[in-house]
Image 1 (cartoon, rainbow, N blue to C red):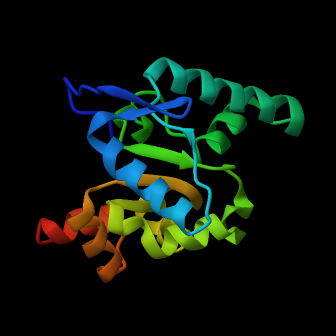
Image 2: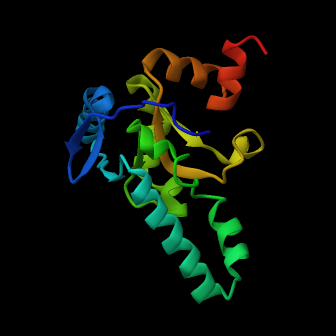
Image 3: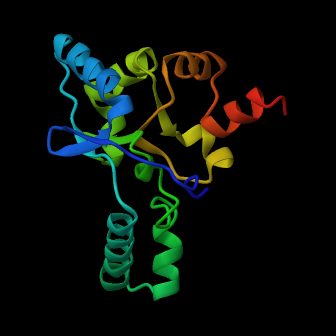
Length: 173
């Protein structure tokens, strides 16, 4: 889904990355709470411009062509399973963060366990879960968290819904 026309991000630094100012306080509070529990969280990737997203996608396509011997079309199709096309990434909103190591084994970390228990308290949800691929169309990304606000995050958690299911639920569908 493309960004709404006129969407504006007011970037604010958290570490070396930026996020929209509207999520900064809750994200910072979540990081401080995790730290108090002995868990280290950091933003590996936050806000991205459309140009940044284009560079990331092109680099991934080139890597698959070079390393895996894929054609450009195969590499693009494969890359789009985990990278949204420029203009369609949630990172453009400033409301999304990729946390820590951005790797498939993130689910095995203490940080992931902590987030699974506490992220919703701060308004964040794991955006792409392995059990919700049929709804999202995106492979599991245990490191990718979206800010939806505390009330919505807690309700989504209670209902065990991803964002697509929750929006349909709110719209009475």
